[in-house]
Length: 68
Image (cartoon, rainbow, N blue to C red; front, side):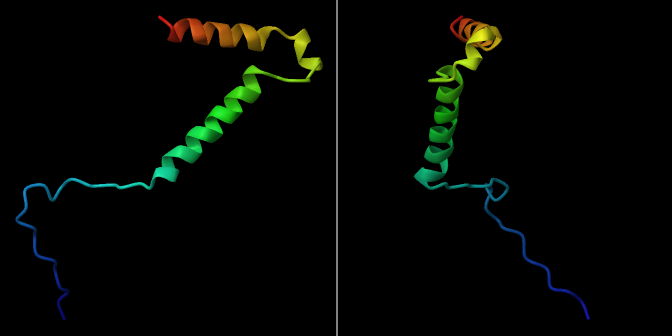
């Protein structure tokens, strides 16, 4: 018994894939990324983190590289 095969499409754009995302599928990861970035940049009440300036220097260099 032979298996059925699907006929090939005659449309020229059949090879492309169209992806449609809802608005929240893009907005939620962007908001989460922004919130985590704010937690890293502004440590708030974390007094123990003030002794290590490495994170501040790293962020300053990233900002400097992105502003060029």
